[in-house]
Length: 306
Image 1 (cartoon, rainbow, N blue to C red):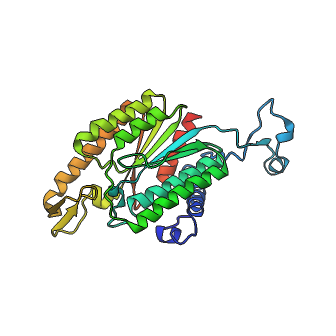
Image 2 (cartoon, rainbow, N blue to C red; image 1 turned 90 degrees about the vertical axis):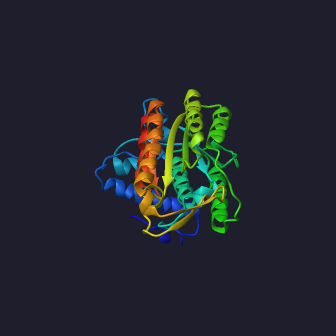
Image 3 (spheres, helix red, strand yellow; image 1 turned 180 degrees about the horizontal axis):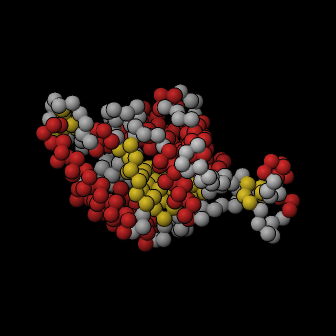
């Protein structure tokens, strides 16, 4: 079941929205060409020789005729952190229902829901020019509620838009995270990669730093495709504003569209190739799309990590 943004927005809490997104995704997964893709939620796990029989869930056995044991919160399989870009450029939207930030928040919340159901430890790191908060990775429900509370705060700020210009400094934040994480983790970065051109190499260097520290990295590049990648605006003059610096430029889209699309493609390919070189997963996200492809990318990464 696919829920549109306007329907999701009417649901009371972010946690409930995340649950509905994931449930819709899983339902669609089993009806798709990916039928049979196993999403083993960690309330139970298959019985292994040596497991105590007292932990077998006999109700599950009655339904499936297979032995499953109850999984407990201390049985954490994976430690994951979501780095969420909260800079001013993430407040952009034109064609879509949601800003990039709102889209990123709901995607992050959905990832957290999946991780918690699998008893993976999850943490949250919102950042712009600096790290806003650093919530360590844990697997308890109370901890998940703390993360949702932080994400709700970001939603409130996005709705109010206080006008404060928050510049991006992804490289600085990623370097700091690389130094602060003491245990090997999966670091999931959700960002529009809107940085000054001279900072691109710095971002790649920071991503390499994470890999050098033995962390796995999954980079989600979130943008509104029709406007930010295709420049699909009517052929009249527009004034575009830099949402982080306030600079303005007047543009006739038809005159620059082809060159713009070429530059964006080159920019994106540069990151894709750099990520491939350092064994970093790179995924593009469109704020007008559903979350399914991105959630599948996470599950594929999760499965490869074992």
